[in-house]
Image (cartoon, rainbow, N blue to C red; front, side, top):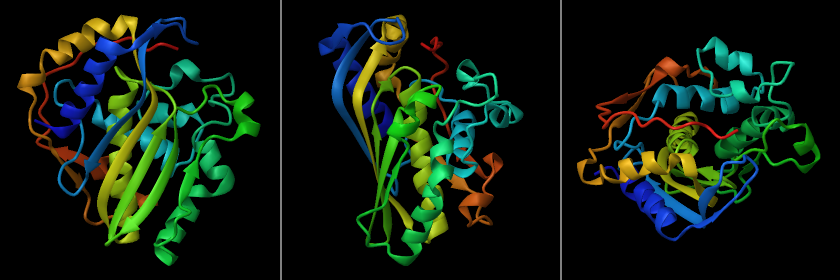
Length: 263
């Protein structure tokens, strides 16, 4: 069984069994548990769910849009035939001062890459999208908002902190795309991928996702082996990767489970 399935489904099951039920900003009630954690050794296995289909290429495009393009312009994603941010697009075509805007505003990605090259023992490699001053001008407050980076024994480790985690739709994307990010940054810095730790402050399941996630739990014993992530060996520079340079080998899954996004 893929370790992603194992850890993810354990959290899903715990939320459905013991989670508190209540209302939230979206108007769709949800079950929730605080402080859920998944951890993966990326040298051993690439984390992506096999008990349901995860749109890997779409996840990669969103990741590159935020971290590489450092963009808040939804039209850039649309040019890649990716429409997952359409619901939050403002009249000017952007999501306001959110996500990639904050990376570009402070040169945070360049600073991270420079520190990894020049001072890999630094304990100050923190990238934050939570800018209190700009929050009122964001179409959506960042969910996966903080990464902390560390190098040990030539391995690049990353902790992702997510303030709010939609277990049905968002978290499967986030755990996979940030694992990709560690691989890409490690390639650029001449390091090996290490630990990826995913911390979710508020892990929740919306009421209209319960049936689909219950069906996914029933697939647990059928979970498949994890695929292998492949990066184009000719690309070393983080800023030169395209979606076509990043793909999975032997990704097998048990099919789609439809869920509606809560806006």
